[in-house]
Length: 337
Image (cartoon, rainbow, N blue to C red; front, side):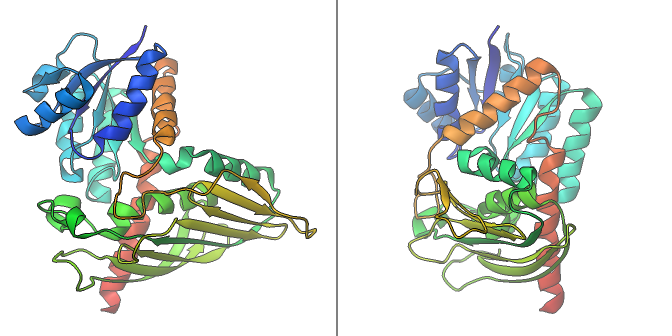
């Protein structure tokens, strides 16, 4: 039987999820039950664009017949109360990134889902890009040897229109700036590939370009538990925005992952193996200018986990290390200020 899916929070993040759900509905994997948002305008826009039911009250959606899985697409600070309501109703949940405003709140969300025996995944879709999957497999095979250096560069741009949304870029709404809101996908992928970070020395500032109270320029030196070292470079002030990059060098080869394109360089001097094509990762003025294929793959993994009674690979617990790293970088920066 198709898995019944509902959405709570109908803002900017809705589009790639709904495009994915429509395709999965056509293949018989899901049935879209409907969406809820406190805003009547957003409910009307959702119905008009997607021709799908809406629920004026969250409780009504959670009580809808056939609902199995809830996509929590609200601002981060609302994730925990919405998740609690969905968990109490016995529904599995897939939560937008970041899992919550803080590590402590994220841990509370993960613990609540585990205690209730429901599955909880987090939308960290960069893990599911084909080039990223290939790099993960390459590292696991040992083809690059022992990792020695691993770095991430996220040099993006967000314009005045983006920051015109009430509360955008503030601690009250987003819980953080470029690290938690934009760079988190690439940082999560770096940790997914390399494993945990042992030490981080960080710096973060707020540029004069926006009236925000969070960082929009950040940098850090990293030491991983596997012994490799590297750097983090993240900003949303780099016009017009460039593809994010992860670079890994090992004892037997190197890899450069630029958004959707991977280059694998061996030791023999042969031309690199190239996987994928150049493309935007959403790093420019339009944050939604990206292919929804990784979202579809991520949702498919969540559906498989629900059907098989297991944790998804993008579980709530797996989303906590990147948030711990972000908090560590910002804490170190504050200490140095």
